[in-house]
Image (cartoon, rainbow, N blue to C red; front, side, top):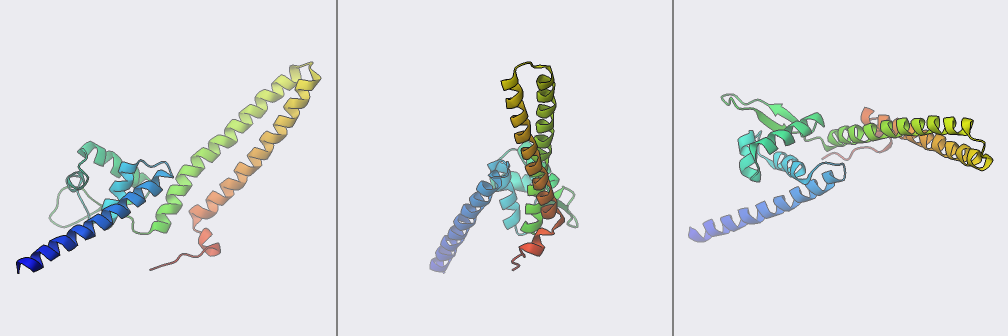
Length: 185
């Protein structure tokens, strides 16, 4: 019986190593969207959990502070990647991962890109307005021509960012899946 128990322990150890390695992959991918690796690992841990977890469970699993867990859960909740769960008889707050990665991606992508894109449109408009004022005041023809060309470049950038906003809307609305269908289980 000892041999079987040792083999089982070894199998469990191999299993945990493989899952941990993939959780690192999740964390690395989420980092592309500006999410810290620790929050990415938190999501991965919740994703592979057999059921909802409390902050204490998360802290024990990741060896991080309860405050870090709380901050991470809040960030993931705002991105709609984690949601509260309920289990009869448990008073502590429970959380589970959003298992629809397509939904998570559209939410994460939309939130991150929308903010930056809107900011870029506004920054370009401010630059245009400031350049127009300089152009109206200058007697330097060469500077006026340079400003006119740069305003054209800024308007081109704005058009790109407006196009990107439409793309973001297609992703957020789920319409993207009409063009690129999901691959379900």
